[in-house]
Amino acid sequence: GNYEEGYDDGSGMIDPNTGMPIAAGADGNKELNNLLRTMMLRLGPNLYGCAECDYTTKFYATIQTHIESKHVITGGFDCHFCQKLCKTRQALKMHIHRNHN
Image (cartoon, rainbow, N blue to C red; front, side):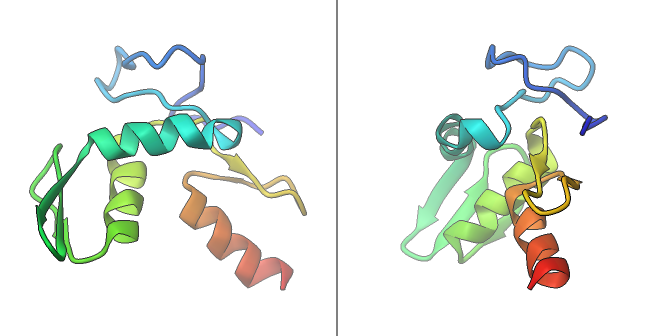
């Protein structure tokens, strides 16, 4: 599929149209995780913040999902059952749970 909000050119560059980082898709989870870590702040023992906005949460997974969905452009993540393209890894997990279980 073709994800219209961004693409993965493999360069780790900033999208000139949005000013947002371009991250790898499903095959680049390591690079995406590294990028997400650079964009999150550890504010306390149980508090994480977003370096791009004022969002905070008690949960590591939630801050990752926030940053991935709001501040990073990926190539999307394909469902291996039906080839639907989802914006984030969390959206793909929810799609599979709702449609293929």
